[in-house]
Length: 154
Image 1: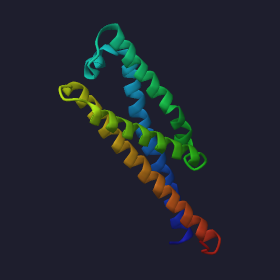
Image 2: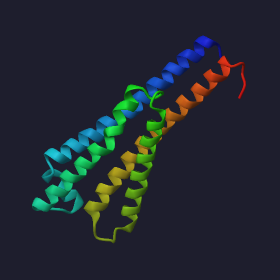
Image 3: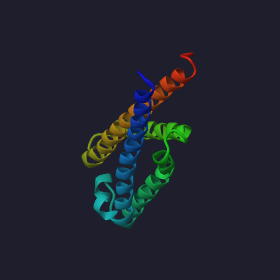
Image 4: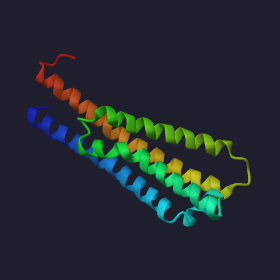
């Protein structure tokens, strides 16, 4: 690939990384804000009710916001904050593994809770796949660009 093509590929990979992380961030924040502002609408899905249920769901919303504090820097510049991007992917893995473990540990008879956790698993798996694919593409293109500028040395 010529230098111009590599430059275009590098730019496209960076944009893809930004879009992937921004999409997951936007959905996460929307969910978090919904949990914080309207916890009663979601408490039943966790088999919770009343003031304790609202507090628990609000707490989950706050935790989501904390979790997403790392995303804006990555969205702004995924190359500059490549290590932070890796942290975002690690966080996504931890969430996905934890949700799967919780889901597997549920006894029978908790259909609403199980369905809620399944939605988190599906979203987090899709988000991880999207962000990881963009991250790998960016790394591969950057490596290829580096090789083209240093005479092809590995």
